[in-house]
Length: 248
Image 1 (tube, one colour):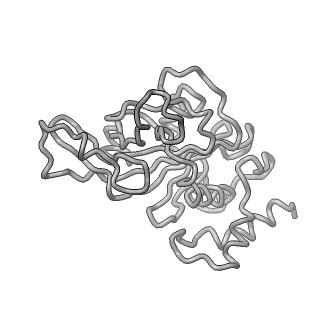
Image 2: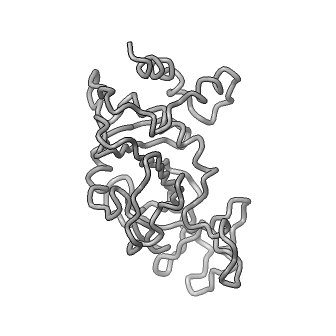
Image 3: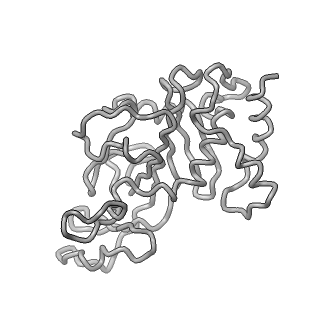
């Protein structure tokens, strides 16, 4: 039996544990051995043993789970705090954005995007094309938009928009005369790049969905994700849209 298959069989039981549960020393040992996206064999066959197996490929469950566990440390793609304040002002925080989707899981959701390889992520839809490296992982935090009832639609939100937590993040979005706050996590969407030609991928790209508690609900060739990302300008990456609406 191939060494990679043995490794994945060993990891499989650990993939179903919600990631917010206490981690034991044994758990840490297992999770530390989860394969990186660049280490997944292009020769490994896709799982076909269950209905919709293409959308829950067991080879990719460990890397989707690991991305959800680790993404907070990578930083939000639009958080200027990681840059020197060369504009003679304080760095702006990451911003909540309203999805432009009119239907599907993304519709009427606020979101923020994290990237493992931030240098390669296009910060504007018109940025020059930069090849996304193997190992790139994007995690899109999705939130339910809570209407801020007490907000004055004509008031300056400068004070209200100041980040109130250690996370350098502005959770408020003005849409017309209404103000919304990203406060309740709806889940996370993961997009990652493995070796081109890997079976069971979208031209080397893998998608996944994760619940707020860390359960991986899809991994691999997720049709609803592929149908949108195939039109992206930067391989399967859109680039950062405006703060009030846009793509991920």
